[in-house]
Figure 1 (cartoon, rainbow, N blue to C red):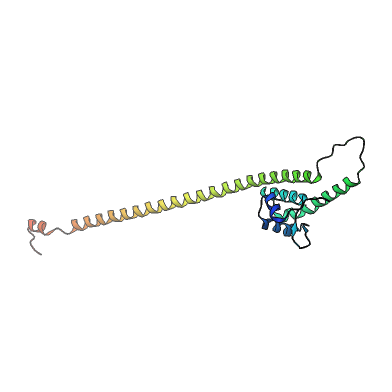
Figure 2 (figure 1 turned 45 degrees about the horizontal axis):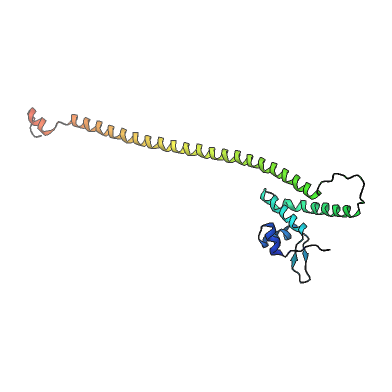
Length: 189
């Protein structure tokens, strides 16, 4: 067949990722990528479409380990569609056939992922709000307790100073001063 083959650098440009990403996805997802006689990878349009789909799903938050379960089904659907197309005999009535099962699966997965990401974002938002509120309440409680401790310490010091002043006044009233004794005629005792 006259199928176009792309080297890894060109395929990476078409998918808009680095070459190491393609290698990593190939290894992790166990993708069947063709090799030249020299052992170099080459990519077909179908490979590039698959990588674009993987990239889109990753950007929507899907993990590679979750994608790994879908890839074999997607490849089988693609193969069975190709076999079916080869075996099909043209019918006089044209049927409305979807572009491809792969695209349907991709759209379905995309919609499911969008819903999951939206739900996840809501849960995260609620969780973050709850955590922040709890931290703010704890911080405010700590600050109020610190303020109360500070005021309590201030009142203790004030109370202590008042008691000292009262004790000094009592002492002064108990023992008359020398001048007062001299005036009263008690003299030096």
